[in-house]
Image (cartoon, rainbow, N blue to C red; front, top):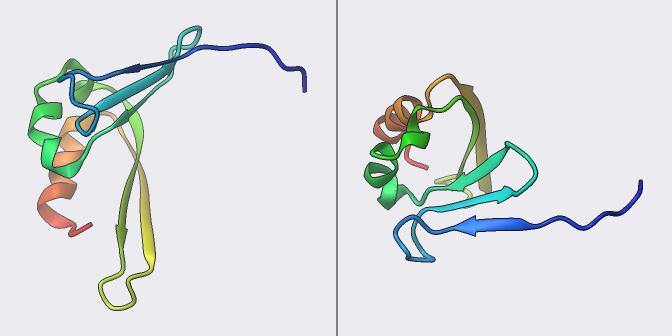
Length: 90
């Protein structure tokens, strides 16, 4: 595999590095959005909430404290993440 330089741009919509963060390779159309659960309502107001996407929910098993991840895909990120927020503890 050949190496070539790339730029990753990180955008902080609220200016808070602990808040929502969007990362993208500037020459690609794919982006990653990190949404802390406490910031979900802020994300739902963003245009990106209506995007198609693959998402990962992170948490831990209540009995063993082992790390857990749930991977899903959706035609509307905001709607699906809101549903998960109401029904999943992690």
